[in-house]
Amino acid sequence: MIASAHTRVWDPLVRVVHWLVVVGVFTAYVVEPEDGSIHALAGYTVLGLALVRVVWGFVGSEHARFSDFVYRPSIVQRYLADTVRFRTKRYLGHSPGGGAMVIALLAALLATTVSGLMVYGAEQHAGPIASWMVGVSKDGEKVLEEIHETLANVTLGLVVLHLIGVALASWSHRENLVKSMFTGYKRQR
Image 1 (spheres, rainbow, N blue to C red):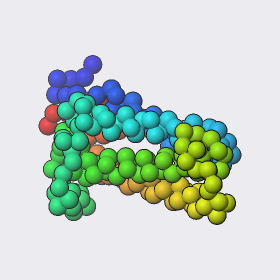
Image 2 (image 1 turned 120 degrees about the vertical axis):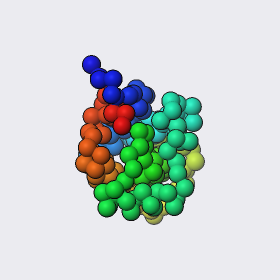
Image 3 (image 1 turned 30 degrees about the horizontal axis):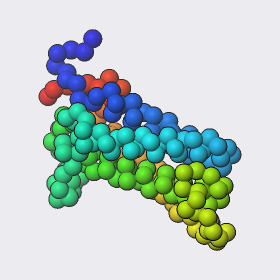
Image 4 (image 1 turned 180 degrees about the horizontal axis):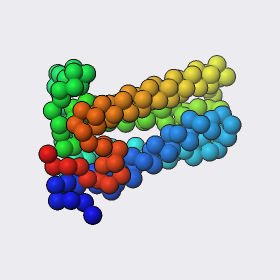
C-alpha cells in the first residue's frame, strides 16, 4: 500500500509504454543483424508505441501531457546547469531536463524507426512504405542503412544520458525515480 505522503504521477499508459519501449529498443539493438524479422518487429513495436506516446502527450493525464513538461530552452539550460551543481528544484512530473529528454527521445525513436522502414522497404521490398522505395540503388540502400545505424546510435546515446539524468535526479532529491516509473507514485514533497 502506498502511504498518503505519495501521489500518483505516472498513469498506467505512460508506464507501460515506457517499459515496452525499453524492451523494444533493447531487442532491436541486440538482435540486429542476426535476426532481421525480430529486428523489424521490434522496430514496428517501438514506432507504434512512440506514436501512442505522442498522442498521449496531447490527450493524456496531467503529467503525461507535453503542456506539463515542455519548457523554454533557457529554462532547460538553467535546470541542466543547476543539475551539475546538485541544486535543482524538484518537480512532481518531469523536470525541464526530463521533459527535454522525452522530446529528444521521441524524436530520435521516430527518426530511427522511420529510417528503418525505409531500409526495410529498399532492401527487402517489404513493409508499409516498400512501394515508395522502389528503384533505390544499392548505393542508396547503403546510405539509408548508415543513416539508420547512426540514428540508432544517437538514440542509444540519449538513453545513456537519460539514465545518467535519472540517477542524478534520484540522488539529488533522494527519491527512487525508477521505482516511481513502476508504481506510478512519487512522494508529494
